Length: 137
Image (cartoon, rainbow, N blue to C red; front, side, top):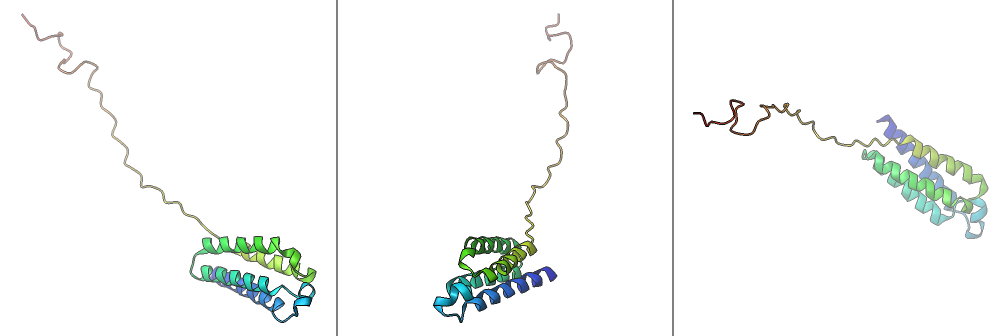
């Protein structure tokens, strides 16, 4: 449960940072002062989806979403002001690293071993290894 709360805290913090960085700035100043609002909103939604998946106990989905967010932020870091690049990249990396996905592969139940095959001689059916025939005179 402590792991989930750390993930939720990190995702919430990331959502607040991205939303807060781009919201109030003028369009002409976005490249200098904050995250562009469209990116901030997109990344905020992604961070909230990560938090929701983690809260629901679906860590594999949360990890997949966190990796997608990390890739998205990395691919668009050129659109961020220099002063925000390191904190946001550090935040998304930290978020993805905190999530653990354990995939369990169901194993089929073990079948009981087959009993060893009994060999009853090497003759053909009907022969009991006697004198070879049944045509006794």
